[in-house]
Image 1 (cartoon, one colour):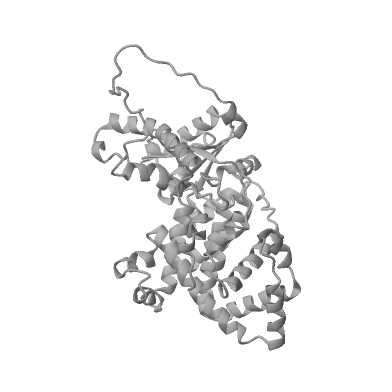
Image 2 (image 1 turned 135 degrees about the horizontal axis):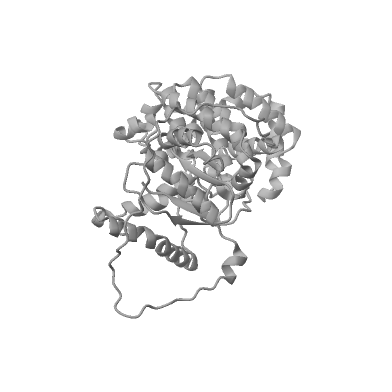
Length: 446
């Protein structure tokens, strides 16, 4: 089992940090004699964790005006994509988003050469998370698991009360998204849209099953975005035919007066003519069958992604029940059941946990680009797992040598930091972010 920890980089601390280098006399040896840390056994039988409401739920405090502004901005994107070459929604919204959170540093944790769902390993990772928080002077810790590990972590937290009361267990948002893609795939299966994708060359026939079941994150994200965008464009064209000619001309006149500067466009979008057409279009969308799929991808899922990418915890709490509704309706029993437990713990958690999440622990920001933070479990796949699987710098050649693997983990954090600094000095982008969709090669008319 592998994992990573992350912390905010404070600019003042970075500039004032100095370190001294000591040199050891004698011959430098590459041998690493350290052994793996012993994992204590956990023999107690686990019972499934149960939902309890010991205290009142935390109010989300989510600003409705923010959600309304996001809906208006999305409607503006739909209209603009009908007339000019426009990037996909993530790239477009990155131009209208200002992210004040600091960049975060990722460090690799000591690996455990056992199954991640083993009870001993789960408790050990919970203890290590608590210890890392204490080393950094925090009274509370946050740890993120996928569903299989989180089930056991919740049970251990309940059976070992009050040992882990200062630990908040989060579900990985990428795994929640994959379960959502699988639910949407159940909805559109055998409806004909997946065969349109293969005939158009957007999706290979061998990838069709994985796309329907939601097995591949990047592919599902890209293909669902393209399919929902095309369907919505066609639906919006049909909607324009139902509008009286005088109203359409007034709307087109107002939209033609929009300023180019995104910061000035937001205020202009509050015009009553735009608000009326937006309201009428939403009613038209919900009145047709294909509008369900468009709502799931272009409304619900994009709003979920927006809250993760902007580290908006309270907005995330406000939308998560609607995600659970989809899981219940489309027979995702595991996530509908354990998602309810996770949601109940999230809304009843101590306010100090909310402060930690809102300060940057909810998502990880590795670049200076706006709208670039990613889910915690996605950054794990892109850093630790991605580096380990690389044929150039991974562990393929020595995966059976425990000492070599531990040496790789201990040094990879420093080597990755050096590479990151070099990339920033020469102007190369690190990782994948929403700004990649602003490149001319990624923008084309559908």
